[in-house]
Image (cartoon, rainbow, N blue to C red):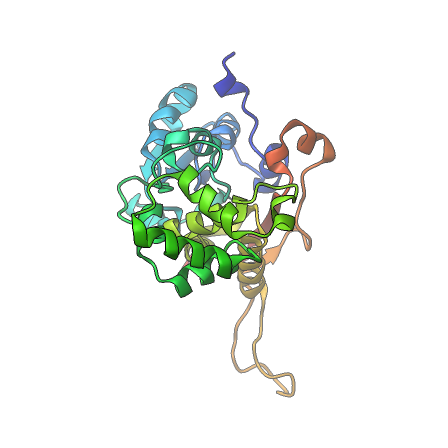
Length: 316
């Protein structure tokens, strides 16, 4: 068995359990990646159907081999997961029985140095998950104002040295455009105090995360995904979302809590006049975390959190 097929996706058993898969159900893997989750969903289907969505053409192409045994049950869709409502409608479906979204950057994208996601390999500043999109990391680094760079580094990367790094980027690009990942790493390091450089994690990790989030509009996409996904679920259908950093997790936690909330009338109203009832119930009050054993096998799972909700109403 090749390395491709021994790849074990994050929180795999927990996701399969959370989805509560019916053999005749319709399911969505909104972040196909290496198709690890998709394989486990597809193999449990008999007359059911699996819709696999990814922004990256390379992931969809590779899935034809990885899901070859189940392609009669699989539909591949090249799109952003934040269009999930439109995707379901375009396929002529009135509702689905479960959806899974793994919000981590897929390993092939990180491992392919040429894509520009990694601060360990020299490559053009790209970072697009979908290469047909226009905005690249080079556009952000060379074109955005110092204040906007500081904002994204602080907000998306939670980078304490955001101001110094943004200033260093702007100073450097006045001489010539910043073109490669390692060039950017060197600028980031030059702007950080010695104490920050001695920290355990790579000095450029937070900045690269911030720029990647900005290039791919990731946080707004998560919010749009939630708002599109919940209405598409059949009654009893499950939504499972894996996040990898606090910003995404906050959006998912807040969004699901909003859908799980019933009456919004002021507490002093004697009777409900809003008529709002919950759309979902939270299957777990706290997020599901990877086991220590999984973290040891796959260090990338360390920060993963799985949140699960179950639909209470039929689709509109």
